[in-house]
Image 1 (cartoon, rainbow, N blue to C red):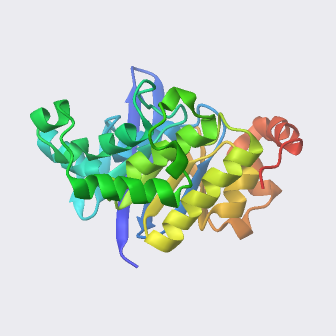
Image 2: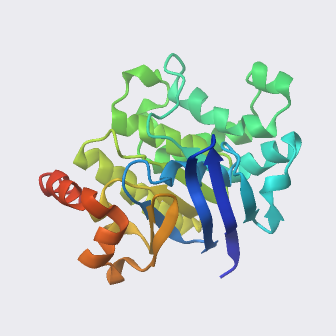
Length: 262
């Protein structure tokens, strides 16, 4: 399997004394499903957003598909972001627009500004969007406004919008944090299936350790901006979890005891 993403000595500094990431090194292969876990404020979101340059790392190299994205100019960044789909905790949908219109927004990176402004999409793009929505069980919601949907349905629209880009990788930033256990399970099953069946690499930030252990090929544990665990979910034990979560571990176990998502 080819390496798709590589972090080499990546650091991110905010201001004079906040180091969000500190000399981070790891590589992700094509088709891997990788969960990033760690306490709040550990740097998980920063790490994820450095990949598509939503946040600019302060130093190091981020190699995606053979190119160092740290040196990319605006036009190259636009192209990069068509190949990396992003799924957000709070969906980032346009509520007054229909499901299909929101999904087609995933094609904007391929359009001229004018075509984007007027919503000029080809029949093929519309068919592609429809088939993705069908796959995600949303065919009956296609023409509904997004503000009429449940949280789980909105997140599936977010996944469809990312998939219509034909990405090589999906970045998922706490995609189930706002959802109940049943909706969370549906989202995780879809993401796992997208990775297994479509061969799309998935990197996901998760607050729920039990969910990360169940669905991932690999776990990266982050604490205070550094990687403290990188390996198989089967090798994680309480010692490793306390290294990742420190004093937060007891609170985490108590929090998750009542709402196992799987």
